[in-house]
Amino acid sequence: MARIAVLLLMVLAVAVAEAAFICNGPLNQQAGAKCVAYTRTGADKEPSAECCKAYKAHVESAKTVAERRALCACVQNNDRTNPGNNITKVDSLQGKCGLPFLFSAARGFDCNT
Image (tube, rainbow, N blue to C red; front, side, top):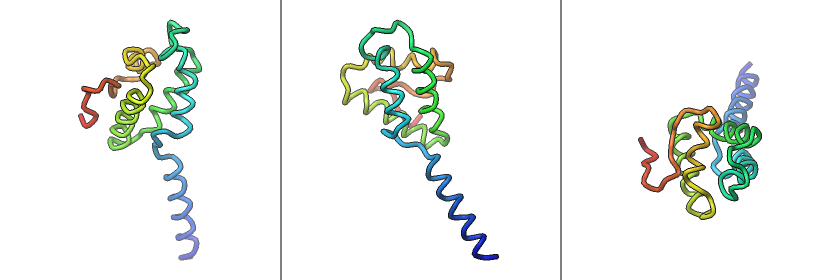
């Protein structure tokens, strides 16, 4: 019986670890790739449905307050290291994709609020 409990705890730990927010993980990379025509090149005047789907998946992967703060810092850092991004358009993704405002990519925004 104890072995089963230990096994269940290990499975739960792996499941929780896989569901945790990852800054530059696959969800972030997918959102960046799907949204580049809106946030960087200006080819799209509005974010595409694919962009919004990928962006929402990335944002919604940050479930806890600590993960949302990490998401904010991640977006700010990515925008600093990718100067081609239009911060106004990056910030507009939350509203245009049906998400509540959680953070800003702007450098002056405090991710700890």
